[in-house]
Length: 398
Image (cartoon, rainbow, N blue to C red; front, side, top):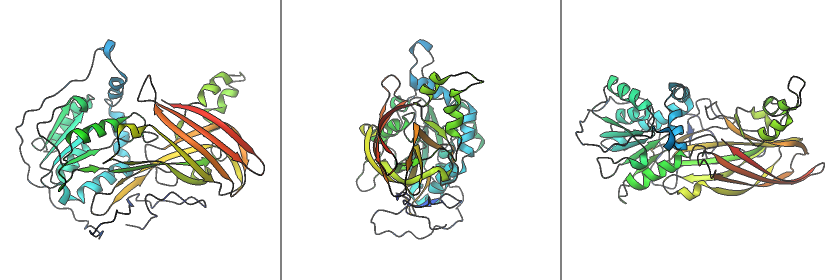
């Protein structure tokens, strides 16, 4: 494995840094007496399957259209195989989870594992391969029907139990679990609010023995923000400025709406014109529901003369409770992931010189009508040689 920059250090104000192509980032470990020697690449054979005959209390998801909530529509979206195909084909995502689990068999051997939002069961099967005594996978979408068949076809039916229901309503047949695994991240890290469910599962089910505390996979996440220009990338032209002239007609009233919605897309790393500052840091072992609403001040420094036209956000996640910590990034300087980046464009561009600062504050809260949407506001101030700016912008990620 190559030796990339520290996982939790944002790129410097100079040229954006590239990730190694394999994307499996080594994360600096907290102060500990344990070593971080390399792990052998040969993986041991699948351990013996253990049968569980415990009964399970199950709940069903709401199918009454008159009583459906945003959560029910959210679960519906994960019933289609296409979204799971996209996630599984994201090798940065899937292979990092696979490596974090299979190269740490000593953590999984004989342990009870909970997979929150198990989907097709891929993470549950990784955990079973790593020697877990039993894995409980919970998901509310109907894809769990196919997941049960997948589990059986791969010989894990006695080692993995899949439960259809909302995590908050499921009653497991065990008093606690040793490890929680979940791929909960959304666009802008927090979109769709699945982390709230993971926090509930942690507080309700994760082993709290101080001598052998439970583990979270992953256990760290950080979101970053940087300044961008628009000319080297056609995203703003194609998605927002487009409405200015549509087949010769002025449709700018739609442009006024479009610019208030962040755009999830892949931006060229050359469009980033500043350092990238951390705006949210989450420790999954300690964070609370209240931490998911945040307000953070930031300072960015331009790394070249250019035209400042908006912001890019991306996140990184880490598995730091394992023998050799790893993680991955969704940055524009890194290998593609299905999360892409989240872009916040401004109506105008502003001339900025190398070394000049952009000061701002970004705030995020769940939308009051649909908590899975996010209301995001950005206040920005710049006093440069050629331009000055003081503005407040409101966005809704939906």
